[in-house]
Image (cartoon, rainbow, N blue to C red; front, side, top):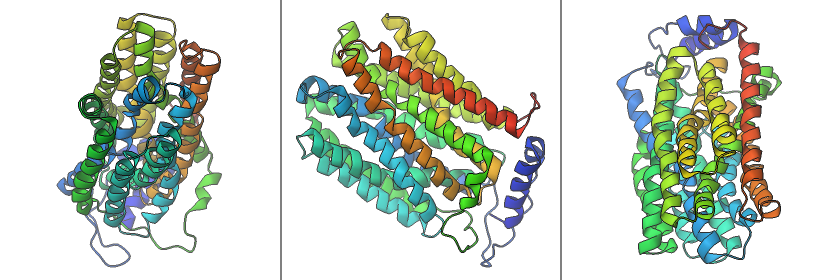
Length: 437
């Protein structure tokens, strides 16, 4: 990207959302190194979107299917191990993906992103293959949890930060399509993993998924091209942003949003089996419904974000997610309402992940996006750590493994707080109600 384009976007962010919306990027000149930089909103950008789509499918998308593994671990392999202990496996997947993403975001400004993506493909796949030979919770914690999170951070961070650089007019929808890869991955992987567990074994489910990750993401790694290289600076990362109150609000929006994001994906399948005395297949179906609606929702939220503004859309999405948990899931005990909650949550919750990078790019410009998103990954990390394990502990201690009320309230409160933080951020950026932000 040209410095002129980035500066126009950053000036727009400083002068207000109206100026940002009306900014027209000039033709792309050369970057400081003398290399010609591709323009925005061109077909080449959609090729990058395709590669990012599959990176998200086999990283964050695969983590949303952990509820299927958790169901298997709780009910079959490790019935004497608490939900809180077992949920740490899935929690470490997301938490370590975000934690190591802090450093991967910085690496994206110094190392070829194609190499980073290829390395992540190999590490992520190997983690699942090694986990297939583990038969105790602590070994799975290290492999399916920690090791997988490390490898997935390379896929997740590159996939999340490259696409917004290639677009101005279609930034939100492009990011939404990328994030939809995680929803589509969660959809088909839920069925595939459950089928492999039932017909082959949990071990072979992990091995086959690992091999697919290496093959697909590895093959697409050459397409993971950074559009513009940031200017060289003395510091390894730009720490000045942490003093900006807009960044602080974005950080807590990510933290609180992700705290409420994972619990329905992890616990709703088991809730279905225990509360309604249904087979494990129905737990898989509920997980698939959430992931299926999230595919539609993430694209729809991207389209809406391009029309009315990414932050405006994020506010509506977190509010809808909160309502699905506290108004639909919490007070009712019938299967039909649970399905409604799964659909609404799946449709709206994807924006928690997909629109944060767009809001960040619109606020601070695209040049610094990888490193700034690296810092926001720290918020995601903390959010993941205070999400499912404490929720599982609440289920074990106060719900005795069968009453999910405390867990549901715990997750819903985080989403309510995330909505409040997003509203405050909206006021800080602009107090004008009917404008695109």
